[in-house]
Image 1 (cartoon, rainbow, N blue to C red):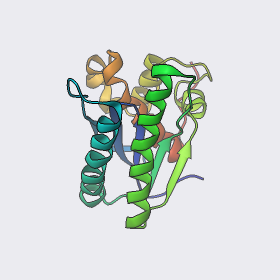
Image 2 (image 1 turned 90 degrees about the horizontal axis):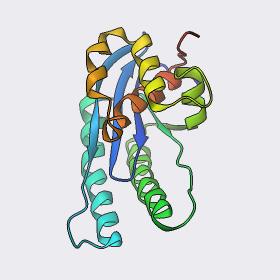
Image 3 (image 1 turned 180 degrees about the horizontal axis):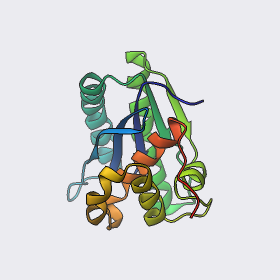
Image 4 (image 1 turned 180 degrees about the vertical axis):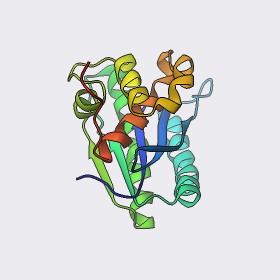
Length: 176
């Protein structure tokens, strides 16, 4: 499904979520990273509930501010056991909360596989996060000045969210 109009897209993480707003063109409108750090001594379940409360408050703000016609998010892979499984549960809780609020607002939601973002924006199915970031910049050269901001693991969620939005709008980066 290729979106028309304005798309709000998310790249879900356990602690933070990248988000972006794009218009067909492609035109970058806004993007960022939102989330909560776990407090010292906070249990996993308490942190999970805090994240859900956070997204219940933040998602309507994004919807009301940017008025998207659709929402796209990257699918959440379920990963192994131990801390990896807890990370998956946190990410799934966050995106489920966001999707529920979008449904309440009447905004359709599409899920896009990470491998699709890698193949279309990073140009290969095994693309690294820096390669996806570079594909985003190739499609939206006005964001080239942000490249130095997107070099650490905790900042890749933002260009990944932009990549999800670009895929939702039907774009793909040119082959090298």
